[in-house]
Amino acid sequence: MGKVYGLFGYPVGHSMSPIMHEAAFKELGQKANYHAFNVKPDKIEEAVMAIRALELGGCNVTIPHKVNVMNYLDEIDPEAAEIGAVNTIVNQGGKLKGFNTDGRGYLQSLLEIAHTLEGKSVAIIGAGGAARAIVTVLVHESVSRLVVANRTKIKAEQLIERHKSKATELGVMDMRELEYELASFDIIINTTSVGMSPNTDECPLSLNNLKKETIVSDLIYNPLKTKLLIEAESRGAKVLNGVGMFVNQGALSFEYWTGLKPDRKVMTKIVLEQLG
Ligand code: ATR
Image (cartoon, rainbow, N blue to C red; front, side):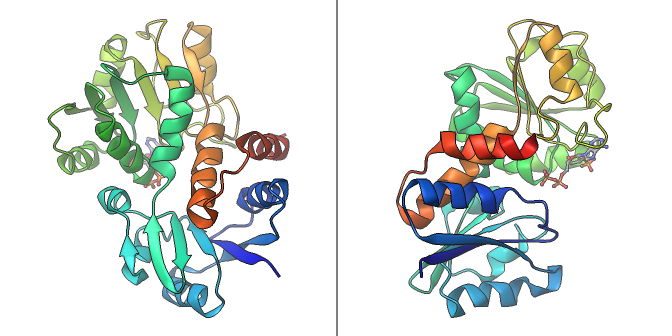
């Protein structure tokens, strides 16, 4: 029997991770299984112990466990510690190490259309877990300016507080300010769930002041084109949906578990098939 990998979350019924990872293992001729486990909020400690007991190769971790799970691991990678959340656990012979591949996964997909981030001015909408992962990697990449705008401004301020940086000018705006200042940004990233299916007619901000060369990016992948992206594209902006981030975060987890590079094209194809 090959290794077993898993996803711990609640609920995980609609996750595309099992089908994506199993396709990647198959493509590499590896015997392995990936199973999505529904782990209720008060059961995460026991689920982590099961990784050792059952000798799972590793796991992904999703909502609502990404922060709590850190309490039960043997070691946390420095970037995951900085983000304050873990989405990947590697079982190193019974020693469990936590990583976060969300930020790097996003960065890889952004670089496919942005090419370089040097000197770029970036606005991030939202201040939750996904925003934290992205802010952490973008500050490491030394973008020139990074502004967080959030419905609840204090949360944006708290997020920025964690990231003192010499190379990046950090700031906070409310949504109205961001709309007014939109033309001063090269990249705009929506990390909130506004516009996600079934609420596809919602848009997190007005794009009246958008300049043409801007990249507008949405972490949502269902629908593939949110109202935000449709509107941005109609104004001549370049757009990026959340499929690339989803595939890349999974591919990076896969690399941590196996030391092998999975075929991202195969993974993307199966995800797009699922999304119809
Ligand atoms: P994730 O881990 O996906 O980032 P999260 O940590 O729950 O999820 O964060 C959700 C983010 O989306 C928050 O910034 C939230 O704004 P608040 O801090 O004001 O709650 C934002 N968000 C969610 N629903 C929203 C809505 N309807 N309008 C505006 N922002 C919303």
